Image (cartoon, rainbow, N blue to C red; front, side, top):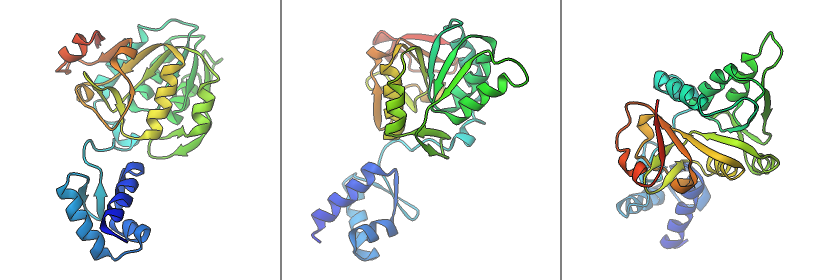
Length: 255
């Protein structure tokens, strides 16, 4: 196999996987590990990839840590954001919530409202909503979208999930991106997560983005909503670099 063909194959693997091991590349290309190492060194010099222990990753933003890790980080700020988001809602509305640590906290806060219909792909979001109604008559209806499951983000995803989203129209979509950027808008690291968020945004009358200060000014790999499509951005008091968002006409709420 020619070197240029190997380069194309390696780029293709990186476009679909966030991380690829050296062993996986050698198996896919049917070449020696030494050949793979030489190719990786040259591709890193070209800026195509970045070497890590045991393999390579695409350059740019790192994927988010597992949800179980993120739930313990900036919990106070995320709860403030969730409570501010609650003020933007009305009892009886239909909501889309994607999977994330901030939307999981929002699910807990939603128990203060009643008559809501919440459509989500987040397993923890659904469980928190159901748990808030434990031992009493359910105040809100929870619809968990079908699809493939991902234990890392504790969510469903894939074509089935997106197709089910298109069965609903929501008053508000509340989404938590990997980053929100003045030029690129709301972004995600994974294509499958972005596909779910994009479908939810498209099926909602209003889009609210929930992003703690660490996400402001950041851009990840996949854009799912431009700033013009976002009605409100809710962040916390630690946020900086808000001028680019506000200059683009975004309504920013500081929790």
